[in-house]
Every structure is written in C-alpha cells, then in structure tokens.
Length: 438
Image (cartoon, rainbow, N blue to C red):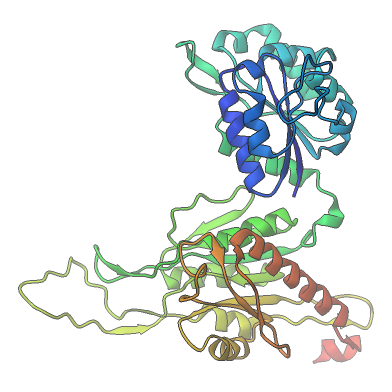
C-alpha cells in the first residue's frame, strides 16, 4: 500500500478530492492532505481529517489549530517530512495559480513548499475556467511542469460551474485513481514486484451457452475474483492477459483483456495463449454443459408444460491446461528449455468441500487449488469478500478466514510466485546430448 500526499487547491472541484481521499483510504493506502488557503474555502480541513484519519496541513504558520492538529496549530509533520514520507504527490484539483507557482519554483505556502522539497512521482489534475485553461500562460506553465517530470491528467470538456462550456473540468476520480496506480507501478521498487518479468494468464466470469437467439444457460458469477487477481498480478509487475466471460466490470487498465462468451470461446482463447504463460489462474465459472443443438429461432411455448433439452459436455479447460503444463528442464550446457508453468484452479462446492477439491487438485494436475463453499457466509458470487481453503499437492488443506477479494488475490499470487520460483530452482539437470537425442 502506498503513501499518497494529496494537495487540494482553490476550486469547486475540491469536492472530487474528497472522493479521492476516501477511495484511497478504503483501498488501504495512507493519505495525507495539504490544502491551500483557497482550497479550505471550498471544503473544510475537518472533512479530509475524517476521511483520511490524518491531520490536515493548511498553513506553515497557522493562526490557531487546524482540523486534527495539535494545540499549537501544527500537525507535527513539516513540509520536509511530508515530502520524504510520500510515495506519490497528487495535486487535485490544481488551480491556475498553483500551477503557475509550481512551474516557477515559488514556495510561499505549505503546499508549494512541500512540492519544492518532493523528489518522487507527481501528478497535476488541472481544474479551472476554460478560458483560463486555454490561456497561453497556463499552457506554458503546464509545459514547464511536464518538462520537470509532472504527469498531467488533462481536464474534461463540459459545462463548468461558471456556466461556460469547454475544457477545464477536473477529470473524474476513477480516472485519476487509475492514473495514479499506473504512476506508482511505473516507479515501483523492483524488489516489491514478485511477478516482474512473468506472464500471467487469468480467466474470470461466467460463460453463456445459447439455447436459441433469446435464451442461454449461465451461472451467477460476476467475475470479481478473477478481475481482482488480474489487477493484483499487474500491480506485482506481471504482464497480464485476462480472458473474461460476460461481466459488467470494466477492463482493468494495463491488462490485455480478451472478451469471450461461451465455454468453447474461452477454451479457444486460453489454449491459444497458455503456452506463453508462466502462471495461469483459472478463476472463471465455466459452464459444464451446452445445448447439443441451438435452435435457430426463439423456442415458443405453444401451450406445452415441459421442454426437453439435450445437453453435452463443454471442454474441460482446467484439465486441458493440466495435461499440457510444462515442468521445464535445465540442460547440462547451461541453456534452458521453456520455463516451467504453474497452474492454479478454483472450485466452488456446496458440500464435501475438501474431499471434492482434493480430487480436482489431483485430477487436473494443479499446483494450487482455491476452493470455497457457496453456503459459507461471505463467500460465493457477487460478494466483495471470499472465504476459501487453499490446497497444494502433498500439504494439508489450509482454510483461510474471510477477507476482501483484493487481499485474497494478493495472497494467492504471492504463493504462486513462490511455487514458480521453487520450480525454477528445482529443475533437474540433464545431460544436454541425452535430452536433445530423446
């Protein structure tokens, strides 16, 4: 989790900064807020104090205590300490005045002094009247900031608070949050990226099997678990491909997302990409059966009370992957055959969880299997949490307590990274001529 320093300046868009502070805090990041005097006229420091649980810096030399500060009017954290503490600095909203001062190295308040002391990744999110934004002076100042290493999230076009129409409205919080996440990834310490240099393939969501042009067979999967795994793998430095069934989720930034519909579609997409994957996590809820014949027209009731459908099996994608998984070898002359692959499956049951999951682990040749019971509170479809038991070959099943799907995704991937590293370390040494002749 990151240390995010949020600068808030004088703009009606300051209310969007509240959303940023709240979202980042809920996601587990530590957030500190530095406000200009003008910014405090739009949103009170007390609001940010409540959202972040940290004192808010409002002035270098206060005239009385700020929200969350001590009796002397200081938060006990200087602008130098703030600058050292932060992993990323985000000024949102960034007014024309503050952009001009930053561009010219002016440090005449708490925020601009902190900016001058800060040496890490930094982002400006401009917000102002469209004519102020288009003014050559503002554009010149933004160009200077970009040349000094600032990432600029361009404002939106639309109706502004002053009723002018044009470019100048601060971008929405969700867009800024994605941009900050990308900026953090770009500047991450390689030692904190256990999947750096690896290709990770993830499946997610349900599949749909047509009965006719109107109806289909499916399940209740929302894709949340698989998408959380894809995002966590991305954040750990992997190149990620996500094969997703039909869901209502947006494709994660920085992830190659392949949309599919049926189990056959998903099999085709996975089999095409599986050979390039170092780690594969199959979190999709793939339909086991499909209609043998899809009716070309809508099936009409016509007064009948029953309808018979003949179903046939879909491809078993996990079993196919287990059968085609590489274990890898190192050759005696120091060269390497293709790297070993790690395969993780998921299993949802409604009874006999451990017994059935253990069978699946062995039958599908998985390196790990994550199993959950639909009847457990906090597990199952459409929830933001999960309750799982982790199984690996030769080890006792490990039940885990309830946790958010994002946290679980990180835990799963860290363990898979260890399994992959162990496979690399344990590859047997063969005589190169023997291997090549064979």
